Every structure is written in C-alpha cells, then in structure tokens.
Amino acid sequence: MDLPTLQAQRRLLVRQKITMMVNRYVVHIEQPDGSEGPMVAFAEQKRLAFKEQVTLYTDESRQYVLAGFKARKVLDLGSGYDVVDHAGQPIGYFRKEFGASLLRSTWHFQQPGMPTFTGQERNVLVSILRRFVDSLSWLPYHFDFGAGAQIAFSVDRKYGLRDRYIVDIQDPRLDRRVIIAMAVALDALQAR
Image 1 (cartoon, one colour):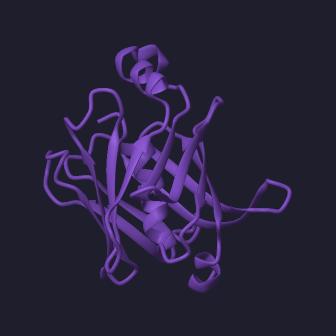
Image 2: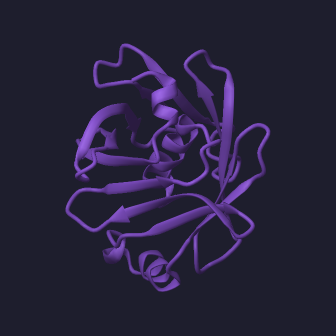
C-alpha cells in the first residue's frame, strides 16, 4: 500500500501473533464490514532486548521497511523512543511517563510541527486492576491521545484470547506510521 493511501485510513486493526521468541504484530486496514482488509504493516519485537528496537515492514516478507522505533537509551524506560521512516529520517517520538500516576498509564506522542499529544488510559478501575493484580493483566484497555480536550487518536485493546487492537484516527494530519509504532509499543512496552 502506498503512503498516501495509508494516510487516508481512519481505522487500523492491530493483531499480535504469539510465538516463542518474538512478539509479532500484523496491522490491517478495516473493511467496510469490520473485517481485516489489506495488510499495511508487519513488525517483530525481540523479547528481553537491552535496547528496544522494532522495525515495521510493509508485509511479512520483510522486503520493504515502512518505519521503525528505537529506544534512545539502554535500559532507561523513561528516555523515550524515536520513530523513523524507511530511510532512517525522524518522523516522530513517544515516551511513557513514569511516576505521573499510580492509577493510570500515561504516554506522550510527538510529531514534528504538531503539539504533544498525551495518551492516558480511559478506565481508572481497569487500569488499577491490571497494574496491581498480575492475573488480570489480560484485561482490555483504552487509550485516548489528545492535546487539550481534542482527541487525535485512540487505541482500544479488545477482549479475547489474542491481543487485538482497534486504532481510530480523528486527526488526518497525524502520520499513520507513527501511530502504528505507538500502537505496537502500547502492547510491547506497556507492562514495563
């Protein structure tokens, strides 16, 4: 899928594929009937990496890079992650805010020329349960990312045996590659 067509998408579906040594993510556009349409991204995350780095490919062949994100520092969870395009040029940045709230996780998302968008879990009760009762970490969650009262995009983890997410994009200016990176990071890095 070419970049202008990807940019026109308002809803993306993210699904994690469970394997032994890596987390795999497949991203599709949504069909009018709600089913998965064409694949727009494929990613793998190595577990237990000292410096987190995830490459987003256009499909499972891994022939063409769409984008990627990489931790700024080794083992510094609050340092943040740079998002780059296929040529390694910066297109965005995100970080988890540690210590901001014991009740809800908070992430910050930046794209050049735009304000910082803050994403926070919508449901405080679900957040508390997931955080303090390990056996409930599977509970679904919902993040709204916005600047002020305006929601720019949201990531909704659905209930089920496999991790599935619905990403709704309200702000057409946002780079879909950075949003895909943020959605993958929410699954891959949320528990850290």
